[in-house]
Each structure stands twice: as structure tokens, then as C-alpha cells.
Length: 125
Image (cartoon, rainbow, N blue to C red):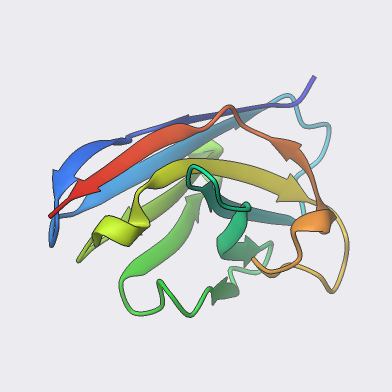
């Protein structure tokens, strides 16, 4: 079975940095697309960033220039480097995978079929 396990969350002051990791296992073939998403209390889940099999990336406007999505295929691991963190970045962060060609963007939440359990990120002012 497919399993995605996030790690690296924690509490940080505004302006600080964190790097999230997502360890993937159980795939019979490499996923076409992987992404990061977040959900704050009382808010809908939103896309943060996505990366496809060729390494092309997309980002939500709210994180562009501050966050970087990357992957290490040899380690079957997805990363999200988060710099210049703001209190509004506080949320549970999830990684997910998709196999729908043409929809590897963070805004297409419906395309992602496997999800991790999440890791909490808290940014204080």
C-alpha cells in the first residue's frame, strides 16, 4: 500500500525557516506528481506547491519566493524548504501524490489521491 509520512514540522518565530520532508513508499511505479498542502483551523485546505516527474514546479502566490519544493528520487523523499515564515503560514502541512497528466499544480487538489498524515507548523510573531 502507498504510504506518505511527513516530518520536520515544529514551532518557529516569524522570519525563521523549516524544512519539511515526505517519505514515500509502496508505489508500484513512480507517481507523476507530488505536492504540499496546508490547512489552518477553520480554513479550507489549500495547495502550497507541486512538482512533476520532470521537476517542473508550481507555487501558490502566498508562498512564491519564500518556499521551495524539491525531491530526491533516490531517497523517495519530497521536501518543502520554507523560509521567511509568517504567522499566516501556521497550519497542518500535508504531502500528497497524483497521477493525472496535465494537472500537476497545487491548485488542483482533486487530482491528488494519496495523502500523508500531516505535520504541524506553528509560526509565532
